[in-house]
Image (tube, rainbow, N blue to C red):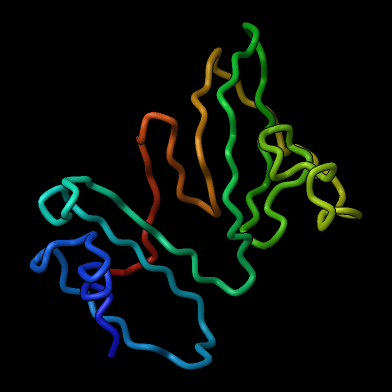
Length: 150
């Protein structure tokens, strides 16, 4: 039995009564699972609140990408692509260097996706970090999801 809370307490991140979470190691698990945890400022030694999430699927593209803030002209349209979780989840979508073939040799030979359609683009977007599906913008506003049924 591994006590994740004890590990965080040893690192000085979480207070002794801040969390009770036990993880059971599963050798060669054959299924995909994810873990979402949230900590309030009272549960951390730094007084910070934070949320974390893992995307523990075998084929998922777990790269983090930074999408910089941008300004768009009036009437601009944003392409909408089919969502993929497997690597590569995006290629040459003009959103982040992480998705550009010129900056990632491992994407060589992967074809550019075709947009499913377009929607109106807002005039200004904030910069944000994204992974498979959790997102957080430059102001610390974040969202994600949990695959837990409870």
